[in-house]
Length: 242
Ligand code: 1GP
Image 1 (cartoon, rainbow, N blue to C red):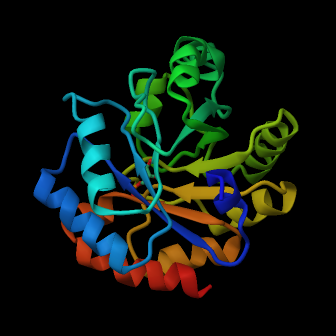
Image 2 (cartoon, rainbow, N blue to C red):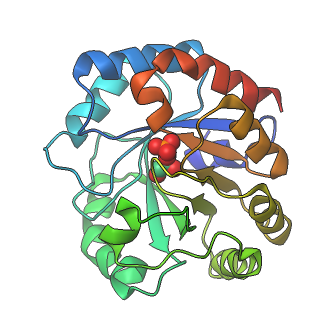
């Protein structure tokens, strides 16, 4: 099954585990991967707003040596490309008005992506305000959509779908204090027919379950698993049960 088919599969809600390749040691990556295998997690996303080490490919190799779960690059910039991943989320930051994040970086990355033959999934990436400045809003030089402006989020997601994007990702930012509201998730869900990803600041299995009940198809969690990979099973059960 092509990776995008797996995103579209409606048989269950899905969990993607985000690994920032800068942070964990090989032993810590292996521990998260072992927990993800046991919890039947659906995807690994690998990437970060700013990487300070040359660790991306190594991280992907460690995951792939220990798991059959598909690994997608979730790039923070055009340096985060590798032939070893299974797929690549080609992010267009449609909540912002920075042309570099809408098309500029893509022009630089495109020939490498073609050369490597990665499965490309064009993704409408939407930053939602979460109460404080996040790395991703600072690094992308874009203003997030206000937390309570569901109508702006709905119309932005709809425009993204009309432009041909294949996924919409509502992002509060890694480690966000406030997650995307269930009201916004539900209204965006009603507006679009493509799969909806939600992430940022989801700290408990109950919060993850609320997001999928509101209409998210895929939940992305990183920070909560960095310290406690054993929590992964509880999150996966809460999401897969819905
Ligand atoms: C960030 O949505 C992801 O891009 C995950 O966020 O680290 O807060 O789980 P957390």
